[in-house]
Image (cartoon, rainbow, N blue to C red; front, side, top):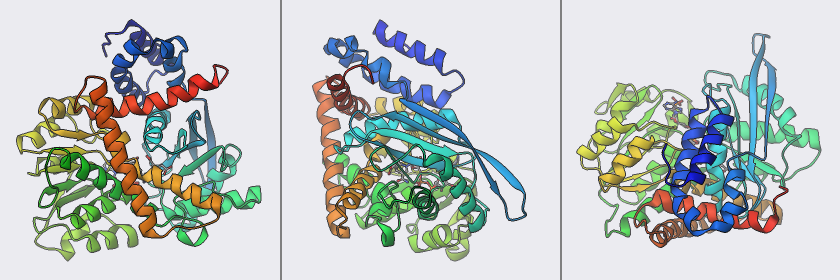
Length: 449
Ligand code: NDP
Ligand code: 2IT
């Protein structure tokens, strides 16, 4: 990475030295620091207070052993993490990822991104992230429950409704949140909003399940509308087929778009008639099966093994909703060659830096994750509000608030980019706007922090 500012070059160099072998974390930090060049020029007070030096270092990180017993009676051991990155504007907030690829680098990149995303929501939530290398795939409900209970037995010492409020992410849905909540309540003997993404019967918010995907589409619609483009009638690729992807595809379809492809980690389905979401939901939400099953119900569709090919399908809009670095430069160029007009990130950091650069230099409208997928955590914050009030809003009330939040995030990113002389660069707009609010709070609160 090269920086114009010597100060930023030094901060980045220190981060590299302090966090060797953490490529995802360094990628996320590098992108934000690059966006902060104009801030460093205009805000010597931020530099003098060491805000950037501090923001790249988590306030606290814990790593712990998670042992549990499988259905054969064998003892299994996984590694758990929680990185509490920044609490300047509210309690730490961010999901828990359960996936075999989880390591400190992955959790730290996610926790770092979460600071700025949560700031952009306009709600009082700090940044954090947790997870484990546990793989829920192929495990029985009993095994998942025993893992989650063991995970929470340690984590409960470090979280709380006013301290740190975890939620879902890859591999963590309503089932896992329920087991974790039950264990927290049992050990602490308190019923509080310590987790979000809960089921409705015990304090979950209506529309939280749909929120990340719906929010992504509210953001995308606004980004297109700002350039006079209607999302209706557009051909849309949605990668992944989990929580974010399913409800992104649902809202895209409701807005008149045509979702022609979806995927999982084994491959992708291509359905020119428009993906049938009832079939996808049955496969993924009910049967927890593979997306290749789709062609049994819809024989006119095709299944292709491997993840990358999905980006070679001709489409107007691409919504990566699976995982980090799923779109590399080659895939970005394939999308551009096929005339893609907009890319909005439902997943966290799904585009490599080279892919982002390719989209931006080709004039593709690009909505970065921190802004475009903030609807999930925003609605988590709305769940926290409802828990505190011991009241529940209707689906339509929550959905309307989510919609307004996403439109405001788009406007804030777009306006900030313009103010800093980077018109239409929503990556810079999101990073700068998200950063400035947290920086201001840190300035007010002093250094011993
Ligand atoms: P889910 O576990 O519900 O779904 C993940 C989907 O992505 C699955 O289809 C999965 O396929 C696929 N996937 C996961 N890892 C890989 C991989 N290494 N290679 C290819 N495909 C992969 O997770 P979510 O939908 O909750 O999360 C998806 C993305 O959205 C993540 O980046 C997450 O951080 C981000 N996000 C989630 C939010 C939320 O509220 N849940 C909020 C904001 C962002 P398979 O089933 O085969 O593993
Ligand atoms: O990446 C994310 O924003 C999430 N996984 C959701 C976090 C949350 O606290 O709802």
